[in-house]
Image 1 (tube, helix red, strand yellow):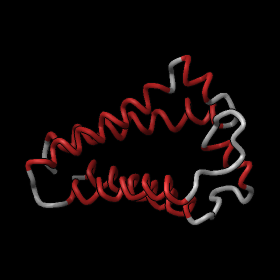
Image 2 (image 1 turned 90 degrees about the horizontal axis):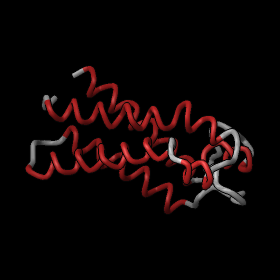
Image 3 (image 1 turned 45 degrees about the vertical axis):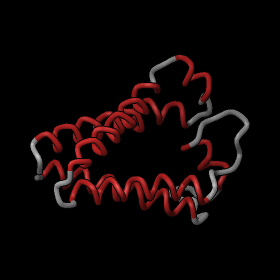
Image 4 (image 1 turned 120 degrees about the vertical axis):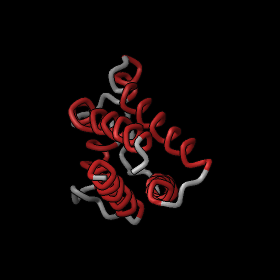
Length: 135
């Protein structure tokens, strides 16, 4: 149960941050260019993704929370498994050469290796464990 609460809190915070970005609030930086360098990291990108991509990420995280805490349903295992796969892939690609080529901008490249990828992998593992013991 504690694992499920920790995962839920992290997912909720991530959903809220993506929602803020969708509304044009550049948290934790005030300047859009600095935020792009920290959270996007791709070449020649100077603007944050718009409200639709940010809203899709935020909405997906909230939907995952609803599935996690909702009544047991046959599709629940597949949805959580799918989310764990997506998070695993996102975390794993960080350590592949093509991803380094696609996202060389600092500080994103360093943050990605140090924080973003390990967080994705930890969330994927946590989801798998929590779902397997049916919190």
